[in-house]
Image 1 (spheres, helix red, strand yellow):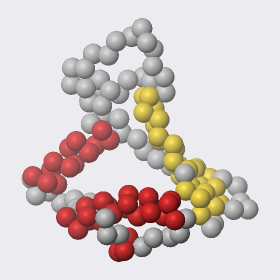
Image 2: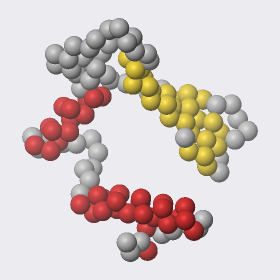
Image 3: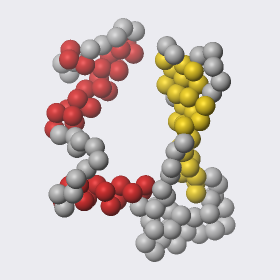
Image 4: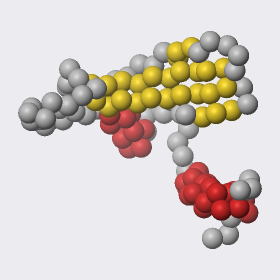
Length: 121
């Protein structure tokens, strides 16, 4: 959930609605994340809650097979030269992602905003 100046954005991801402890899982090609979605598969929901307006649902399509399609798309983009629908991250993006943790910790400790460009440790 994210709270902002114009309202709140909520994301709920439910991998499995319920699990029967008496039923074992057989994983041939991946019963939970492979080519077969079990009948108790969960889903995802996005709800926008603007200030002073009724909440609204944002339609989300969940594909249970192959980790939501990433199993096929990611290797194709990396190894087959297939065109990716989004730009791929590079080493600079990875470094930027690593800086977020120390910046958040410093902000928690000081109670002040921290620029990621000022992190030295």
